[in-house]
Amino acid sequence: MSVWRSPLFLSGFLIIVTLFFGSIIYSHFVPNEKQPVMQIRFDEQKQPVDSAPIAPFKEMPFGTDRFGVSMLHKVIDGAKYTLGFAFLVAFARLFFGTILGLILSQLPKPVLRISSKLFESFYYAPATVVAYLLIYPVLQIFTWSVPKEQQTIFSLLILILIAVPTVMVTVANETSKFLENEFISSVKVLGGGRIHKLRKHVLPYLKPRLSILYSQQLIATLLLAAHLGILQVFIGGTDFITLDPLENNTVPVAMINEWSSMIGANYYQIRGDRWIVFAPLAGFAITILALNFMVEAMKRQYLAKGAYTKRTRRVRKTKTPVQVKKLYQEQFDRIMKTGTDN
Image 1: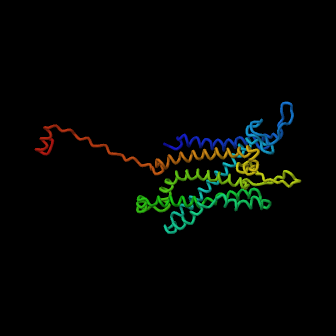
Image 2: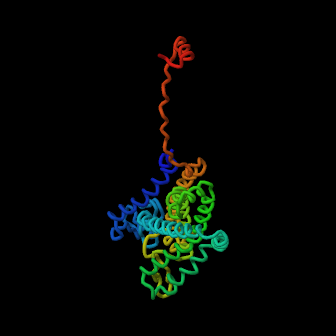
């Protein structure tokens, strides 16, 4: 059975597609210039009874932030940025990691063993701390000297490079184990080169595993972005707004409605107006839950049932058996005596 027929996979896939393309369509019809804003809430007598941030289910479903902007609008608008960044980073991690892993698997075994031990240390390195130490100076300290576009590109490059070694080691180990099969030796004897083995045998074997690895990298990217957002490292760029000039009360704000940036910019309000943080956090939770559905369905299909080793084989055409002529007793006796049926 194909993984596309799995209800678990389809439910997760539809959630991701709906969030991403729904955000693009929504932003086309409701740009930021038309975003719902409510800074003051009035009663029936037109008397002010509440001011921003306004709690949920009071005129607006998810409430507003401290500037009166609807949180529902910000979450829907930010889905395309968050998921788009995650799609791009996870794909780049998998692409470069797979290429380097295939190259690493072709090296001599002592070199492969030493390299694997060396790069396996990245499994235990705290990715959040490493990314924070590399990205924070560019986005917070030297933000005045680095254009916003370069800040975003630099952040994406760090998020990509930080996970390439682990993907490379995973692909190299899987490939080296697969190349130890007996039929690979037969392919080599028959004249199959390294490129032939990788293209015809290794890549079909790795394809389902790479699908699982891609979904796992999506989850890891989203979690890393959420952690960096809490540390006020905003992937889409950082700006500063002075709320009170007399007290020099300056707070960082995100340049775009990206979910992790929304959490980090409003994290200090979690004790009071917590819905401002819970709205983008719910977006993260739904997305990661949908991706986990897809990963679990692919594991059941490819790993538990062994579908990743299944190969299409040509059905051998069996020759039609020759119909034997039925002999009567008289003909049999004649043949035994004369050697002919005549």
